[in-house]
Image 1 (cartoon, rainbow, N blue to C red):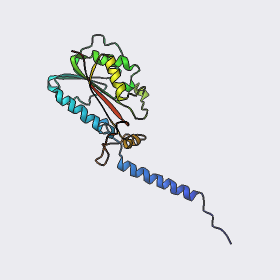
Image 2: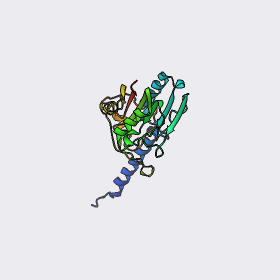
Image 3: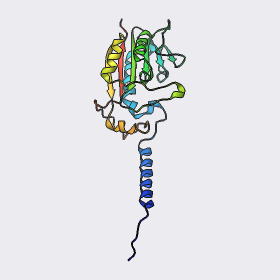
Image 4: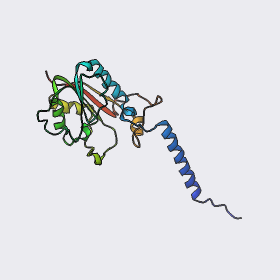
Length: 217
């Protein structure tokens, strides 16, 4: 009696189809963000920073944002974007002007010398002014060498506080947010936030860490 032998290609093909189906489902449930502000990992961070800036009263303040312009549209008294490589956060300031608010988001992890960068954040700030810093923690290495952007550092909440305090800044608040679901989904892409994505915070799994600090008096 002849036996029917299945080709090894059959289960392999089925596995490939199943993998494609899972990929299509994931792209629907976790679509790629088209801008940083849309990313799931940044939603609680963005809300915290916006509340903080609103409480400061931006219409009365001058502001500088390091390598970005996410907050340029707010009603600042004056706003300037300090972009790399024209502006290097680790280089001597050489008498550069100061501001009431200095915003440094998703930058500290990319600088060669975070201690020099933190000192310059204080140096850019008017006495009694405010410094806003955010940086990722549980996130994959992300580099863009063609733009001179390398990935060097990760800071826990305690580590970010220590970095800023050693630069002479007074830290008013440290925040963090993350959960195991967003950690896993960031492995392959930066998913945009959708209403079915959890915003539950697991403090031991921070994806984003931020600090609100002041320059002494």
